Image 1 (cartoon, helix red, strand yellow):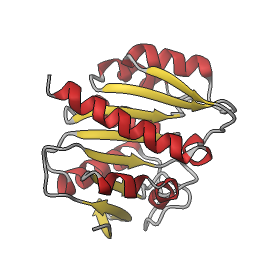
Image 2: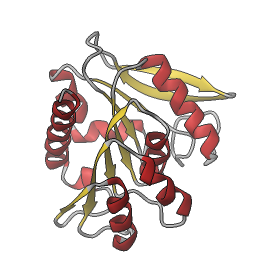
Image 3: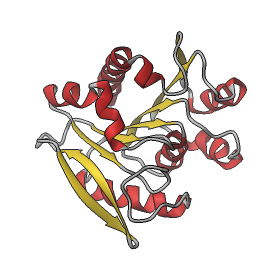
Image 4: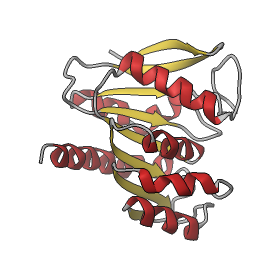
Length: 208
């Protein structure tokens, strides 16, 4: 059952969409939205229904870095956002393996989180925005998760930066034709299918 809960950390409370299955061997999917979006944005792609029908758990929080998020306080502090994320995953995911999906500014946070968390087995970055963050590019080298990057053909992110990032994390790059920065909204069916295939691949590699 999909639930909306209010989760707090260090005096900040944010709305979070959760769906938790009993099967702890399957990966939990963690969604990190972009700056102008919220946890609810992902529902527009149909991905929640697709995951539920296949027995996957997921967390789609509103994060303090977002401009429109349902949080009692907004901040782009990396420490606070990572702290809230760690608290969320600990509360709802425990020690389950994770597949992290990060879009734009959420992709930046996903890089920091994945570089520090051994539970992350898969990392799907959607137009990660790290142009002004040399540290993110540097620490990406320590990410061991299976990784993939998706861009929109009309994307605003620097292709050169993305190519550097891809080389450091061993990720393939896929480009959605005629799609913009939020390519998962421009091509929702393709995004959902690509995510399901990616999750399956990560889980198959995990058992080898």
